[in-house]
Length: 75
Image (cartoon, rainbow, N blue to C red; front, side, top):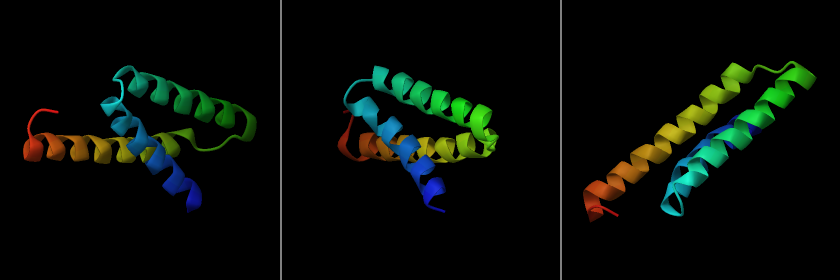
């Protein structure tokens, strides 16, 4: 349960990192993907499930950013 929350939080923070620098989104995704690929190879974990959890968090972050744009205007 804690791992799921960590994956969702990672996606959320990756999306929100675009407020600092848009390139951090790419870096955040690549770091998470490399971690999951390594874990998949070493442990045989379900990478696709954890990537989906990351995606849920990322989608939530994008929704937060869109709501922010709608409420306060463009950045």
